[in-house]
Image (cartoon, rainbow over all chains, first blue to last red; front, side, top):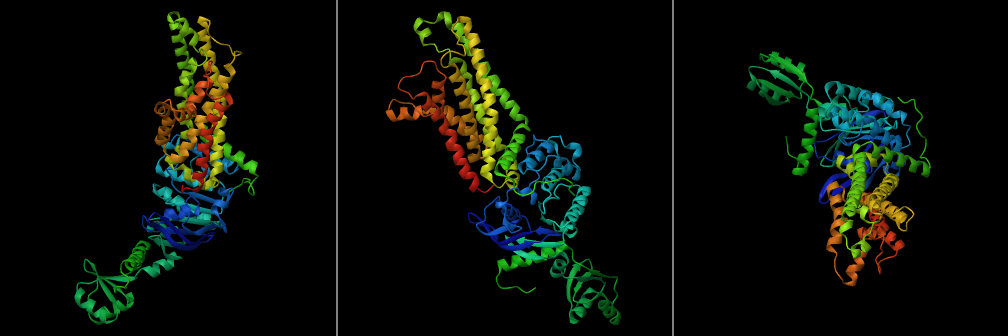
Length: 306
Length: 270
């Protein structure tokens, strides 16, 4: 388990992480989300003891990372897939890492096999595609068979087959009871991977909830109504307590009423309806909405009405 | 997922030191630049030494008796070390700046948070490579140079005074410069900056610090390049430092720079 309490990191005048408190629990995939520059990578570096926090702390199973003697046995991390000298082979890179933590060198072949890089084990990393480097980084994280795994933007550069593989792989690791923290700036990515979401913006916690909860909380569910008589029907629906937005192309986006009720109203008032579709917001939309909210709060302390 | 016995617990201090040194050893020998750098140093040191000795042999008939008396057959073949020292220093620089430039340093520190132990292991590996290779190059330089000079019967044998000292001092000096390179690499993090600093210390400082005032002479005496030049000379200059003092001068540089690197590497954000 990763516990972050009141974590703050300032670089000169900029605050990259601002009083972050959150727990990452085992047995599930936790998505760590935020727009670029939100402080995700800084938070991960602080967890791994690479940067020193200005205040607050991060612990792994109750211990600060820098107190760990053989960290690879507890925490595996992929921070930057490009971070291997081009002249070194995959096999030598992993061997050096394994040796540093007293891990038997035989384990290198296992993890290379696990990520599908056995065939290029002796090739120099300089010739690897970004996707192969991501796989090599994941292999490095797995070396010590750790209970906690941290992946920073692991999907970048993977082809569709690789993305599918990595998703089911993360799910399997979580299923084995491990703590899996995956950062991404792509919301759509998390929809199919994560159970839990931690969202930050400008270094602050915006949301810490399950994916389902996140979608429900953030998104207006609405019903798309296509009708040639938009103006009149919109007034009618508003009178019934719905909020109506113009979806363009002759479509009304109606929130606050069920599709059945909208259909009944159309029938009762003899209004032609060509389409009636209940829509759930995607995670992406929910994210835009939730982060936009938080940005609004920062910009204008007085809440604006919508 | 795993069917393999991973180490339990934290390991002993000695065990961890062995692991770290093994890891750094693997890193050093898994890039081609290491082989090229060492080969370059050998060819340069031995080759230039042989060429200079050959020129001496050619000049010999034209030398005046005074010039012949002042001729130093011991130091001349070591002239190639002017370049070889820089190559060894570069080896030390690259052993750490490669990690900074590629970003590997973060992976390294996320695997081993005891950063000073990482640096100590790097220093140990640089030492383990530099000492035998440096000694072989120094011995070969001596042997080749003296073999050439013996055509005029001015070559020395290994049993002559100063011969063994010169090989030992040259080896020790290459080690010192390599460790200085490692220290500068940690402090400056960029290969170009670290090598620039190395060139300044080894080549520019002796040019700039010139004069007759007592304190200027003291500083000049304390430069590593001057110390090694005297240690590989047959004719010791009077009034200068004693042989053990010269060794101390050479040692101060790596000790100070590695010490500073230890302080910085522990505190700085990676």
